[in-house]
Amino acid sequence: MFAATAIRSTSRVASKAPMSIRAYADKASGSVDKTFNQREQTQENMYVRQQELEQLKALRKKTQQELEAKQKELADIEARHETAQKASEQK
Image (cartoon, rainbow, N blue to C red; front, side, top):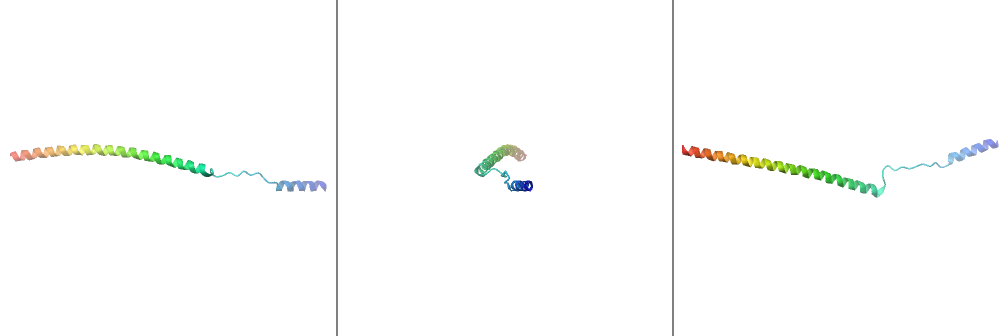
């Protein structure tokens, strides 16, 4: 009887003993996470802006080259037109 009581009392104590449970957070806490996210977002924005600026520079350069080519073509057409007018006036 004493043995049965001893076994029961230890099993009750063991079942009621607090278990050590670790609580893990899903993400880092507080300002460290917020600061990191802000810094990362800022770097991404700067990278995107830099890429856009490079694209704009390339587009401006291409547009300027096209403009110069069209101006040269226009000058050639005007010169041919003047030559044609002079030739028609001389006849």
